[in-house]
Image (tube, protein in one colour):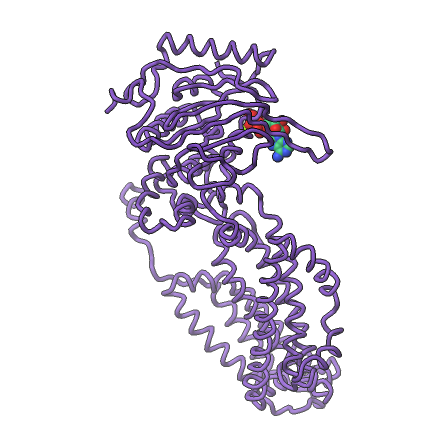
Length: 277
Length: 332
Ligand SMILES: Nc1ncnc2c1ncn2[C@@H]1O[C@H](COP(=O)(O)OP(=O)(O)OP(=O)(O)O)[C@@H](O)[C@H]1O
Ligand SMILES: [Mg+2]
């Protein structure tokens, strides 16, 4: 099973979940009447079941892109499609893990994770999944806790479980592991990869951590500062190891990291202090 | 101390224990009783033969003796009683002083400040009228008024808070009509409704409606936008967002409205009971006042105080159940 995964992109079931952006632009009108162009003529194609990372300077429009794919906002110009169908509203086929956990404070951890199933009316058939995902993100024993009783990292993991349990075709991850300590972060990376492999979900992850992007992704999209475009697409052609990630001390890993950082530095004119080395 | 002695400690935990603090009420009752029996009544005291105060103290003594005995065996009761004992004792002592001031020394004009026994006597004389007719009547009227008002307020609050159109058309109306004092509506209510009863319900319901509308609407308008976004990406439709996000998140605000509304509804109740309904505790108090029968006034006041207390407490219990998740977030 593992050997089949190495180098491969598609899990057997994944034939849906392709995202295509053609000349996508997004302009925001600000309260003072001014305009902010967050994205301008962005083009990209993400294959079904692919794991891609978006990396780019702060404020360049990464979250904006994810919100567009989720259907929370609509494009100013261009087309954005999921499996060929234009995206014009939200739907359970596209899950989004927000930069902030945003758990519902009136629901327990279990209630939060169960929310999507209840909303879609599949709670009865799928209730067994709830505990599975709570265990998966390491919140066993906290099912009855309310969000204010959780630490920031725990809340972030709960919100990850809440999105995962819905089994979307495309999972949009906005710096999902940013709030976690190094160790939890690494084990969560592996958990996400396992879910990805098992479900064949298309994963689009925003991250500021170059290592994380290389470790997890099939391709890394490096973005320019606002208005954002794709500066470079880097295919990570390092074999995945047993837990589906890449060996962090592989020479190719180090080479790729240096390359991405150089592109970012060049694209951002000056060095962005927030990138991890 | 030997090792064995230290270790044996936890196993020697005593299950029955006497806490002397549970005796505070009994001590106070004894004092008040002695004062009542030993001190002679004032010679000008009306109805000097009434012994209701002694009866009350006797009943209380029996009650607290039984509780003190039971507290030796029941841990929860012991802790509560020990904590509250001093407070109850002081309360009973105060009652003893009131008795001395009114029945023994006649410090105040007794037409307005009757002895404790005379107030208690009212309960014996008129318990049917006071507890069955008046209290029952007030309870039903209040429930009807608060129920109607709360339902209407909740519905309108949700609509105004949720829908732009309702907000546009109805909100100004709510703002203009809402702050009008309840009693101002009486002349209109009496004409508009065929029965005084309906008019009374309207007067109570109106104030409740306004407060709940305003706080429900503002609760719903203040729901964080990101909750809707999360909910939508999990597959929720607009109407599902209303029932699964907006209303649960607005619930603390809705309960605040209900609490405010209930408090002011007690005032409206007394006003409403004057609208030809001719029953209820509020009406009883006014009637007794007009007859210059102050023992009845006090008796009624005590009943209404207890009534409001119970009404509010039940509401708090309900709120604490529904808003369990708030424990530790907000304290009110
Ligand atoms: N609702 C909005 N109204 C106005 N401007 C907005 C809005 N949302 C985003 N923007 C602007 O669009 C730009 C891109 O924002 P976005 O949140 O996508 O950045 P980001 O790449 O996710 O940054 P970060 O890495 O810091 O999260 C920013 O300049 C921001 O000010
Ligand atoms: Mg962002």
